[in-house]
Image (cartoon, rainbow, N blue to C red):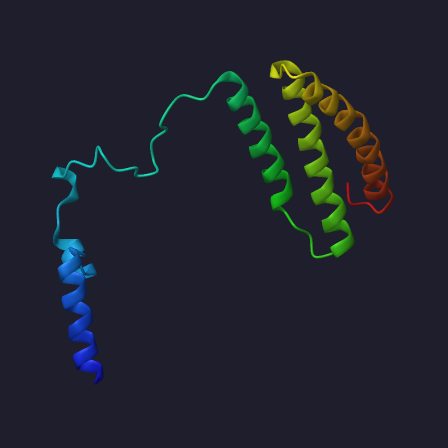
Length: 132
């Protein structure tokens, strides 16, 4: 099939599917359309529970701490893992506040102890190299 014919066939297929081309899309006034049945991604479907909000805050802080990646691979590893471990401790603290299951609470307690020891080790390593 020649390129113009292929392009025409693609345009017909898009038209048959109800798709709009970019030029058509720009001409449509979407402000008057009812999008209430569509998940547009900008609205929260339901309010977060207190526990969910706490986990989300921990997750956001942890990922913000992991976002700055130094050029030195060793320092990048230690700083990224430090933020990750601190996030694990915070998440475990949230679990101890809200979780009911004995096994989950036990694991959270053990995670806190293990991660705090590793946090101290990473902080010492970073301080010794002037990276903290």
